[in-house]
Amino acid sequence: MNNNKEIRLHIVLDNIRSVFNVGSIFRTADATGCAKIYICGMTPTPENPKMYKTALGAIETVPWEYYKTTLDAINELKERHIPIVSVELTDDAYHFQSYDYPHEVALVFGHERLGVNNLVLAQSDAKIMIPMLGIKESLNVANTASIIMFEALREEK
Image (tube, rainbow, N blue to C red; front, side):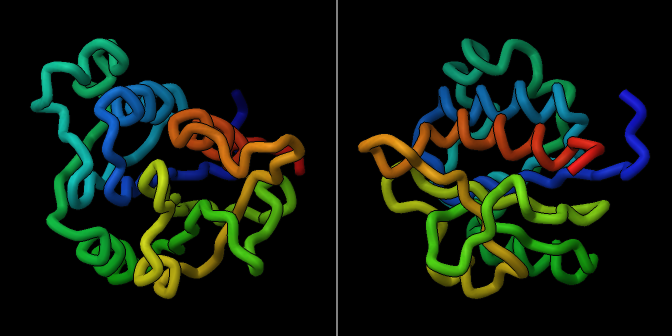
């Protein structure tokens, strides 16, 4: 892929509870050349042996760090002037395909049932969402992460 935008993705996992979702996100992070995964709060870390089932080696190829709170990770990213984009169904969220992703961006994915924490949303530079056309209000967080990460890498919008 000729990546003229040279997007660097930083992935923030805000209290995701499923080790299998986290493992799947690691695989997508590897596939998209992610700079780092910020594992926050109750989110399982790669030390959990169940993660190997879905990560399939990606925990060795994608840099990661654990943060006690998601706001700790957000503060570090803000100090580095990296825009924070939360993926959440809010009234002010942009359609994920119409958002102009910066050359370097931190994408925040939230808890499977509760979504991204309101304090984190308040610190976000933007919010994006995937519109739902069916009965369900959202996708699985690992599926959402895959869609959003690859969309952020698209060259032509």
